[in-house]
View 1 (cartoon, helix red, strand yellow):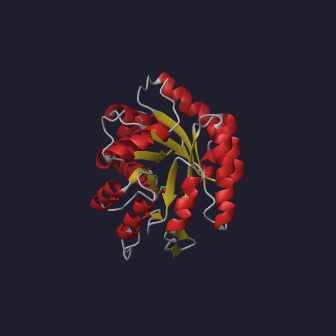
View 2 (tube, helix red, strand yellow):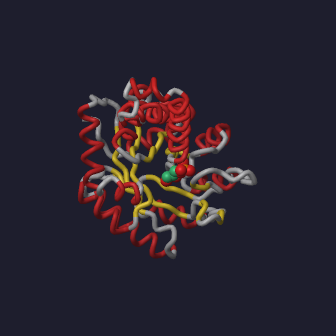
View 3 (cartoon, protein in one colour):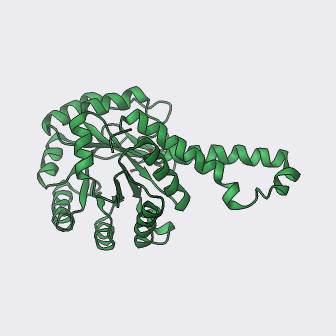
Length: 293
Ligand code: 13P
């Protein structure tokens, strides 16, 4: 069984200068695509569900069982962590309960004292069950209702205090944004990342908003201390683009495609899911985690 908690393989990535991917899943086929890519590349991987995706798929228990059962039925041999992405405290407790092997408690919207207190509590509960913990300081920017938030650079003292709570890896705001990057984005604050990494030597840092950052910046961030990179939007765009192309082809060749029964969802959605697998494999190569299983 390849299901594990993530702290060992994330720390190994930090120690050896590469990063593992934290790939968000949205459904069964998405999960298969990530697993196929990880196995093909022989890369350790975190398959993560946001709170919204967890609800969409029918709850955390469904997600945990789906990932676990696919790992078994697909004969996956690489280490796979089942991870909650950006969890509120109650959701973290639920995922600990149902058997996720890794959780992110996101208290970045709370006053730092409260964020630290709850993170410490999560660490106690999760570590008692061998579950790894990610927390966040600073904030990750992103678009909400058309307004682009820049995000708040992670204060160095907050990062040091969060590491002391016992978390296993730390998400830190360094100018990164969830979703597509706007044309006027200033790039990652690599100078800030460098200061942060110096203050928490050897500690694995997580880069959220991994889609659309130029590869050279990602590689530099990994060199400075990033050991996990989160990717969601990039896979969604790969899926959407491949599906749109297929639909255009379908429209142009309707009689032939109908005769081939390409309206069957297993065939209709296949190009999209193949594209997700391709995107994940490509990211694993950029992060340097191929053949690190
Ligand atoms: P993107 O959607 O920008 O890739 O961000 C994913 C992420 O950070 C999930 O936590």
